[in-house]
Length: 270
Image 1 (cartoon, one colour):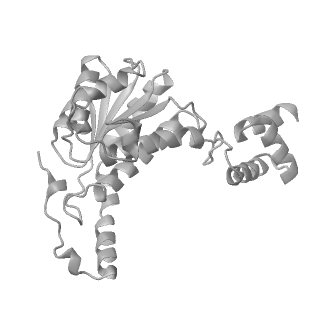
Image 2 (cartoon, rainbow, N blue to C red):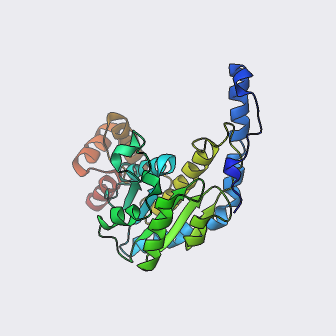
Image 3 (cartoon, helix red, strand yellow):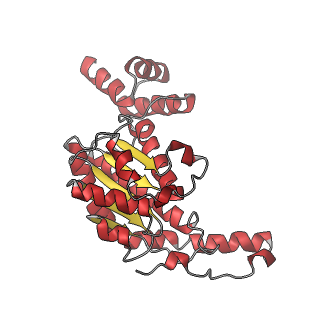
């Protein structure tokens, strides 16, 4: 295994840099992340394809991770219902230490190799589902244990890691390895590695939801109308789709609850 995420930073004496120098150098490192992700697209494609197929057949997507990686999984999972109008349990993010660890680190939670399977079991996980482990280092015991148990129960597994040849990638049926290299602040994988993981998770669930028919054209036609901004956006989408005025579009949207349903109702009753 090549643990490049732990390598010494390309920069030294950070405390001697000006604010502008710190920001410019962080940004310089960040610009390498998208290139690293692009190299992993063939792996992401394989994972996205199998997740979409499983979810079309009634399965779910589970993320497991610790620390920053776990939080990123929770964020991506929690954003799927409002963005795509899917049930809250279609994509589930689980973090070592429980939901309290989202805000406050839980000491040694990531070192428990048995807890991830216990956490997954609370959701009555089955072999219809997919489990994706997220870990910058690729060595987190919580994630390794969860993937091992999932494999033993014939559940498809994937991962998103930022080192090559890691134990987690070895456990995953569909590994995604985005090698981001040393961090600006040595070992702080909340930076480039975290950014890479966020990009991959965005790509994964957006691709899956498109394949599941939760997008029309390039619009979020099933989004939840949970605030005035989204209601206004939805109204404009209805106006553009069926050519009605704003008042009519807003009324259709209010009565039907989503852009898709509003458009379908109009087309069926015009």
